[in-house]
Length: 307
Figure 1 (spheres, rainbow, N blue to C red):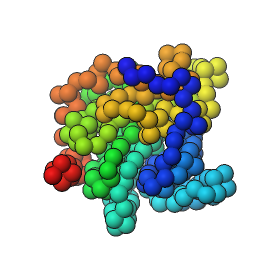
Figure 2 (cartoon, one colour; figure 1 turned 90 degrees about the vertical axis):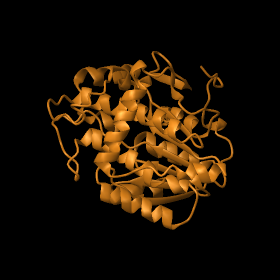
Figure 3 (cartoon, rainbow, N blue to C red; figure 1 turned 120 degrees about the vertical axis):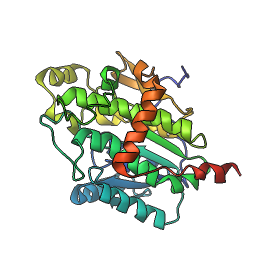
């Protein structure tokens, strides 16, 4: 495991001037703090989220806290592939490189099975398929960066997840937490497989531990009680994401909190769930994801970079 500076915090982020960053779900919780601190450090940050009003309000708050920073709101609904494609097209039209993509947005433990606009189970569709498609569509912009990095947010629940290729979307049986855990394990499979297929970029993952956010709105009483004792504020929960976005990491690393079973505390590298190392499952999941989204990754970008 890689050593991380003890008590690493926002003061250790370092200069990020000149970098272009996209943070999905950056209007609240971990996402807003991730975007704020990267912008405060000098990066040009695209705040990508579904709700226009909330997104614009979040940008206004960030500008008030960091007047010299550059924040821009762009609408992105990860539960709608048309929206994902439109967002990617707008970004690619700028001809700007993309230095850091933080796949942060997510939904959690939805009580009843719901579908996205495209007919996918909402947790799998938003948490995994939406970010899979977004990353693939933005690959040309990542290829323009000298040091591109993709940070994919997972969760501690990934340790309890298992990929059931016959029930990826809860078609046969739906239980909120197992389906959520499966989507978060899928995030790790995606992170690892992306790193294997695109060695010219850094592909890393993070998880926030027990962090207070609006994701817990559907969780049960037991989780809410545990959060009352072990939960940390969203600005601290954002530290693993921030370290993954700017720290000394290698592809395939998983960054999480350092204390109490990785539930809270400063960031450090944490072990991957054993199931995440199943390469055959990762490849099968990748194939299914390409088929469902219609997005095929153009890895000729790597050839251009190595030429």
